[in-house]
Image (cartoon, rainbow, N blue to C red):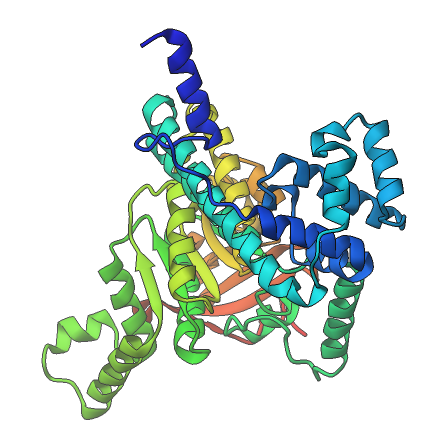
Length: 481
């Protein structure tokens, strides 16, 4: 086999002209339907062209090159408010040296004189979209096949690219309207009306912490909420408390990624917090529980079984793998309401740029999570580690975190919509007396809130139950209403 022939076969494979196994396969197409739709556009351009645009039609819907050219002309003239008549279109094609590409004057007249009726629009459009999707699947498969043979990229990158391309096909097939200012204005007006009639009720998902809900107006779609703390502050418990509230009280599907703990440990923590029966009680009492304690534990187990909580405990999960798994869970649970991740610095990115810089890697992960929140249209809560800055602060500020303490990358601070800094002052107490005075008090400092106020959320941490509960602030705290 000659080198020239091999090159041609590769080019044909990439373009979709042939498949690896069948050289004479005809790509899915419907030339008559294409011609019918174009003819409808000449009959009633205002309604037909606008409907095609709102349904997401692009030039790729047309398999015949001449029809793509005519669609581009019709679309451009419609956008400019110009008529779509045979004389004007012929002149524009001539000016752009494209008249012969559509079959000359005879080919153009064939479109304008094609016998059809606009009543067939829906049936013909659906047929055309089906052929386009089939071609898109074939082309994506060909590109994935070629990349699998020839690309030197990491396997995770190849899988992510392939999945993204297939997802884009689905999105383009499902698209039924393009962006509209009026639509967004109407949606904004609806939100404003909801705010005016809310009587103080939040518009997003409740976290289970009233003061936090009031400050952020609930968890909203597309938002990235970073909860950061030093080790042993209870950030995993705080995130689980929120996810527990959403899964068991609000009764919505929730997805949790645990890069640090096995899934069974998370379930145990949830059962302790939900039932009010601590691990210490289990160890000390053995089987001698009161009827009330046993009842609470059994009820918590029943609630957990009935919930739509999904836990993935893949260690060192990459951003591309997390994205893929989140999409699959969303496919199985379309009403998935929130994703929680424990924690950011244990995730990985396998791009070549990320391998050379840990800061770049964290930036890619952070940006990827924000993009995923927007793509899936849900809030993502991600935990993050702080550096040793809080421990080195003097006096009363010892242990009090700042946003600048976020480890390894300022990109986290940039990408997050909200940043909550969790800390317990008793952890840094110098003696037992001070520790006893502070007790189990904790605090979530909302240091960044893109759409609302910042401030403190006073909490109490019940360590034996792994649960944070709201508390009334002390006089010396900036946590009052």
